[in-house]
Image (cartoon, rainbow, N blue to C red; front, side):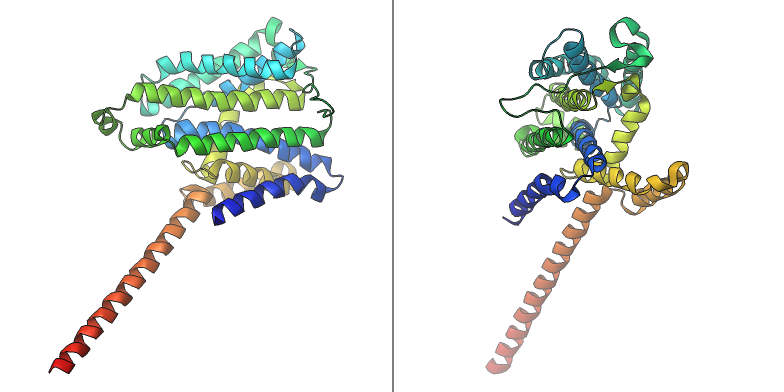
Length: 338
């Protein structure tokens, strides 16, 4: 009940947040972008945090989703509400085909292979001028079509649209993790050999996890294209995937709240250090290093471990208290009998 009330409180806070800002459209824009990146990081958490396979092609899938929506909208004249499902189909198909080959490797080899795949996607976007616009990027991507009286031409309406998709993404992530499928992913992460001996089809489950991860990345990419209305090849570059990985590590890899906490924390921190301009990285870098040293499991992971230790300590105290009471009672009984 406490957890549910906390979630309801967070949702209400997110709904009321724009009214607390007043006329500050810049902060609203930054937070909306933060929500979009959070959706992508939830996808990375499924494959890396719960299945134990670090996919460094995640920014590539993000770019596929973004460019699919952009090209379908600008060049084919298809509306956002049809372009987005088509983009998700294209991204998940790409994830399926890449996953079939990539998941034949393990550990560092898998990470290196997916990093190369991500870079190939970046090169395709960067060099295929006739389709993607190359380094010039894709300009003039339209905003989502109105739904009845609701239009999405303002920053506020886009904030609520992205917030809706974020809540849906978190709900899906929670359902997946708490399902039998999610427990299967955790079993593969803990010991793939043991999972195989239990009769789990590890290749099939890893492939599903990889495709689900690419689905989240494609959704985030599609929303990004529609929100910014301009995309360039830099969204597929390796720096983008390492940014996502940073968000995940800071928040807590393999935790449900980690992607949200990590992304919004880093976004807030970068904005707070903006006044330092180019010098901000000199402070930002050491802060990240300290976070990783003192919270190796991330902010959420560290909090959960602290909470677990506290509960165990409390239980131990109660047990010792019961043992002491029982021992004292026996002593009194013997004295009486004597």
